[in-house]
Image 1 (cartoon, rainbow over the protein chains, first blue to last red):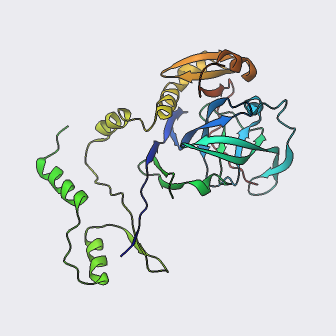
Image 2: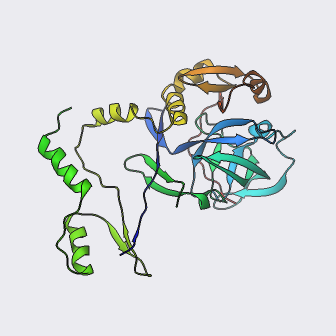
Length: 146
Length: 144
């Protein structure tokens, strides 16, 4: 009888930080941004199944070797209701969990957080992996062979 | 860390094999229920098994922290661990600076990202982040 196998090669522990006396734990992953010149620089991103597209802080435009953050295709970034921010979309190459993926990214003005410089979203990227999300044990399980 | 031989033996038996005398699919599924292994039969008739099982009380939370700290998931993971564990000190020292994080140290800092990149031009895959002097916002949500 053939069985569906869902096992994982990588485990990423949630990162934690103290905020106003409360320990906050977040699924943060490290991603390599590959510039057009081939340079690879890593940034931390929040793993976000609710983000349809990967979003990066506007401040990171020089990692993509752009002259400014707002020279791409304009797009509106929203939460539940009104338009929240203006973003600009680009095509970028990233190395994620050992795979190089060309995918859309959006630069926008994000709130400051030293532990993540953007949100790792679904578009193109999630097709390449399988994820197991264990909130209780504070682990993110990853397979590159879904 | 004290874990009885019996407990380890039980774990080993469960992990290495699942004994069953089932003679039908229904009985086999009942055996899976008996050992509390989660399963799902799909519309196409495939059997899905959830591999991960958790055994509460294997070690204390303090011992778990030691074990987890000794086993970073990746090289990159250890840099992120170090950054998050030392965040308060780093924020105090590098407020409003871009930093590049190496193995348990800040290898470069600069007021702008282009300046930082010139300092780390020969380093492969440095971990780069911005340390704001403003209060950190922890909760927000976006979508398009």
